[in-house]
Image (cartoon, rainbow, N blue to C red; front, side, top):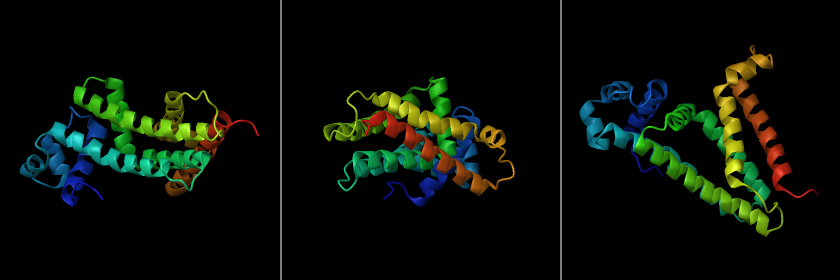
Length: 210
C-alpha cells in the first residue's frame, strides 16, 4: 500500500515528467503545479519545497520496488537461479515502464552536483545491492552459484544493459529493420530479447557448468 495519497501521486508524476524533460534546476514549482493541475499552495502543503517533492518522488518509486525485491529474496519456493531470472524481468519492466524516472536517475548521476539527490540515489543503490548480495549468497550456500561473484559488476551489467536499450531503442529498431513494427509490439519484442539475453549471461556467469 502506498504511503502517498492520490493527489500526492498526481503531483509527483507531473514533477517526474518535468524533471526528466527539463532537469531539476530547470523546473519551477509553478511548472509542476500547472502540469499537475493544482495550485501552488497544495504543493507547499503536501511537500513543503521542490527538494522535498523530489525526495518523496524517489521514495515513492524506490519503496515498492525494494519491498518486492525483499519478498522475492525471502521466497523459499524459488531456487536462487529462479530468483535471478525473476529479478531480471522485474528490472526490465521497471526501467521500460518508468522511463522518465530512469532518465532522472541517469542525468543526476552524470551531473552529480546535487547533494540531496545524490544521497537519495546512493541509498536506493545500497538497499538494492544489499538484497541482491543476499540472493547471490543463497545460491553460493546451496552450491548452485560460483564463489567469486562481483555483485557491483552484476548490477552494472543488469542495469547498464537495460539502460542502454532504453536510451537507444530507436537505434535498435533501425539497426534491426523494425521500423514498421507497432510501438506496443516493439516494446514486447525488446522486453523478450532483453530477458533472453540477460538470463543467458547470468546463467553462464553465476552457475557451475553442468
